[in-house]
Length: 142
Image (cartoon, rainbow, N blue to C red; front, side, top):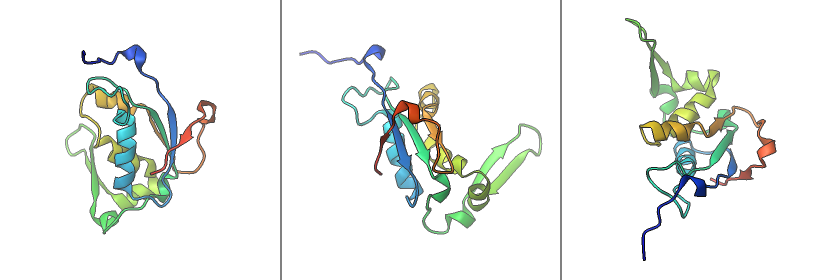
C-alpha cells in the first residue's frame, strides 16, 4: 500500500458563512483558521492550500473576555521614522471591527506564502449582510 499524495486538481472547495454574533473572538478564530487551512478534510496536506472559503458576518458583535478591550493594542508602522501607530482594541472595534477578526485569524495561519494564500479566502463583514449569496454558502456552527 502506498501513501496517497494530494494533487491540486483533487482539491474541492466549499463556501461557509459564520455568524460571529455573541461568539468569543479566540474560539471563533480557531475554528475559522482550521477551515481555511483544510485541517478537517481527508486529503489535507501541509504543503497545499486545501481549505475552503469562509465569510464571517456580524464581526462588530464579537465578544472578548477579560479586559482586552482596554489593554490590548495593535501596532502598525508607516515605514517612515516616527511612523509607529498604536491603537487599542476598543478603538479598533468602534472604527473597523473587521480588522480585529481578520488579525486574530491571520495569527493562527502559517507565516509564509501558503498562509497569505489562505487568508485571501477569508471575507469579514461588520454587519449581517454579505454579497456572497451566489456561492450558496453553508452555515458553519462554531
